[in-house]
Image (cartoon, rainbow, N blue to C red):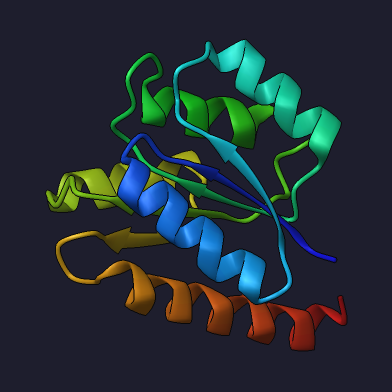
Length: 132
């Protein structure tokens, strides 16, 4: 069973995505961004998700800083990260890719069902390519 960690403070998005991924057979881990970066990194190292969905605007964590920590940590940097944010500036997208985000999606462009469908398609294609 594939594991996905969703780091999102909007409960509607968080639980909507949780339900869709669970129905699709994923083990879903949730984080509302209410913890310190070191706690989230620790959770990632212990739980070892196969994928991470990350919002950039969180209550106690800077999403850019968290992205940087994940992609700089030799134990977890290979985990694909899907940024799903309402920050639409092109500089934000470039900054995310420079920090190591694998995919970037704007909340204003997609509802959560469309986002889920795109992420699922990417995961299926990655599995075909990597045989996992």
